[in-house]
Length: 183
Ligand code: IMP
Ligand code: MG
Image (cartoon, rainbow, N blue to C red; front, side):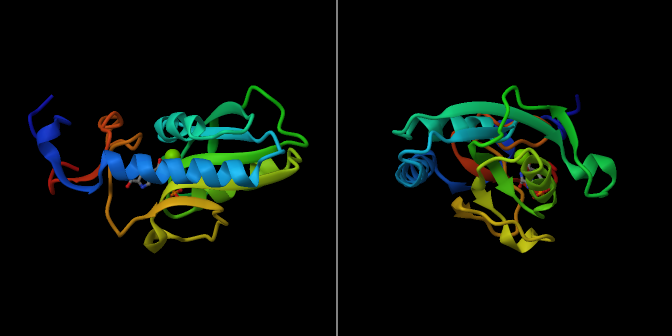
């Protein structure tokens, strides 16, 4: 692996959201969702891999009974921008009649989620809402209704707290940009 490609911490540029800011915001989201779903026994669908770390913290800030399932999809990018998404790991449980909340790391173009929402609605959940940590509105191509959002993001690519560049940086407790030339 050449030194230019090494995904080391020296490539971190600017920290946009600190670990403290993230924890505070995720705590608020957990409380808001708990309030809205007080008697509903929601089922959270965590989108692997990016949403896993956010989900782990979010669920521990929730004070209502809930269930958790995981799903992995390949983004449209690897399918040449076709808007078609491949299911890499489907849910273990049925969502029929359930109060479902999709938990994502980031909504950018909206293409991945809009496909996923159509796909999951066909399985007849009682309700289907979206919770995303980050929302890069400037990248949006297709509108998706977001019920819970952590932070709005400017037009930058970020890593950390679940988000990756070439599978690295997911473990950072903060969200940051990378130096120009490292990606
Ligand atoms: P979409 O463009 O809304 O379909 O976003 C698809 C996926 O791209 C997201 O779920 C992320 O996994 C990934 N992605 C988009 N923007 C970023 C970023 O800034 N950093 C890391 N991953 C990203
Ligand atoms: Mg994602």
